[in-house]
Amino acid sequence: MPIQTIRRGVVALLTVLSLAACDLDLTDPNNPGEDVVEGSISGMLQVAVGLQAEYSNEIVDPIFVSALVADEVGAGGGTFQYIQELDVGGSEFDNTNGSSEAPWAGQYDVVQIANVLIQSAPGVGMGEATLSGVLALAKTFKAMAFGNLLMTFEQIPTDVDPTEPSPDFDSRDAGIEEVFRLLDEARGHLASTAPSAEFTEEVLAPGLDLGQLIDAMTARYALAFGRTGQAMTAAQRVDLGSFSEFRFDANDPNPVWNLMAAGGNSTEMRPEDTFRLGAEEGDGRVAFWATEEDIEGANVPLDAHARYGSNGAAILAVLPDEMRLIMAEAQAASGDLATARALINEVREPCSSAFDEPVACLPPLTAEDLPDAQSVRDQILYERRYELFGLGLGWDDLRRLAPAEVKYMFMPVPNSECDRNVNTPPGLCTIG
Image 1 (cartoon, rainbow, N blue to C red):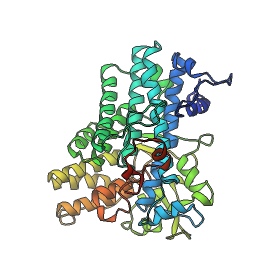
Image 2: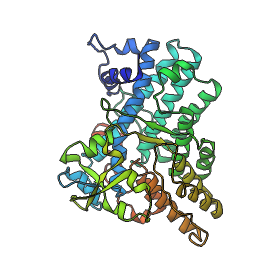
Image 3: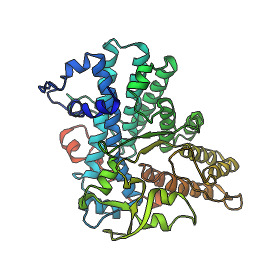
Image 4: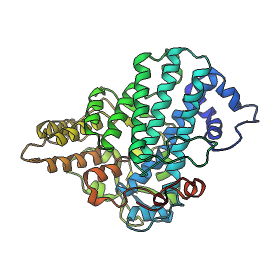
């Protein structure tokens, strides 16, 4: 069965599998029950395909929250009040709205589906090489969900079960450790047993290289969580001639386009015109992400989406230049400014790419231009803003590289969790 057919066919099943504390027995004869899915090879492979679909559609929530906080996008004039407030910043924030609820619920949907695979796939009798790929996939996507949550919320539970409404919250350090434990285990699965052709051809989504994704996400989260040495090591493992992306089409549209550009006035978000106006003259990356327009926003003037102006546009997952900028930041942290400058210039200078990615086509910078560690860090922040726009990273970049510009440190844990989970630390239910 074609991957896209499976992807659309398991949406209802995945919705049920991800619901907490509910009856998982389905009565629709066209959909298998939980016991059938978890007891069959074909059911597990369908869930593995669906896990990728679920993640690629849920990633929009941490993306829009980060983009608003980092002033990548601004609120349209008719948007929900919480979108306008998040755009402005500085006020007490209500944890009943979508900026808290949506990323929390969506990323935990991904975690619950990954848990189904981790717990059940080893018992259905699939071949060792296929199982290796399935487990690596499940642990990678679970780690990415936790990583996204920890870039949005200060603390989270990682030991979650649909039947337990009050899981304990981990310390922030323990949550971060769980991200890297999962990624290390995923990498170990691939190293010990190469995935089968059945997995790579029938399960893994087109556009993804799982091994590269594991190393790139290790580098991404290590940088975000202050582990620059680990980030450097992981980024160096990534083949800079590789590229991974989450793909969409008219039947399965890009969720960023669907929310920001096609969702109507209530969720209309567009690039702030300061993104274009603040760019270095001639920076080719601006046109990749935004098109000059004169749109009146709720708070600031807005441009139009370029990349996210199409329902079939891919969301970039592994960009070689993200890895270069991670290595540049790690080198700057270690005091090797010359290597950091060279890596920055590797991002700036090319005028074309074999991949569908932003290209700067800018002149190189010299030691005179970037004479000290602070100027290098400032330049890395600039390059990341224009290279990685709208990928959910801008908020953490500000926390790390320009903390004085951060509107909020973290989102509050949503009211639904605070009300249900007696173990939620009270201080997490208000804005951080």
